[in-house]
Length: 70
Image (cartoon, rainbow, N blue to C red; front, side):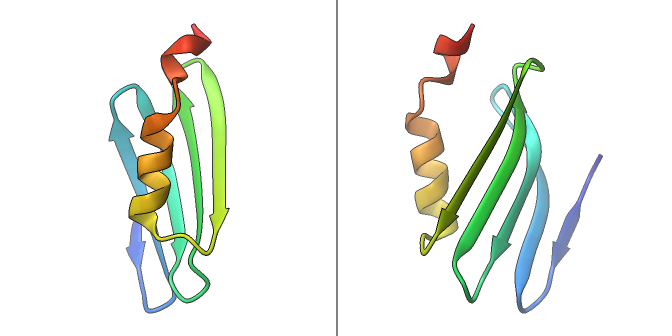
């Protein structure tokens, strides 16, 4: 499933990164993010944040040791 939408209020987009595939939603004015993804086609993960920009949230996700789930 591919989702790619952007307007003045939010961004919604599909992503595939490393072993992650999912959907990212970012509300621009509120600086709220939600990333819902499958890791390694096995684990469902949801990350949500408030008052953080998208880059900061992605950096935090990259710091997680998701490979330890296996």
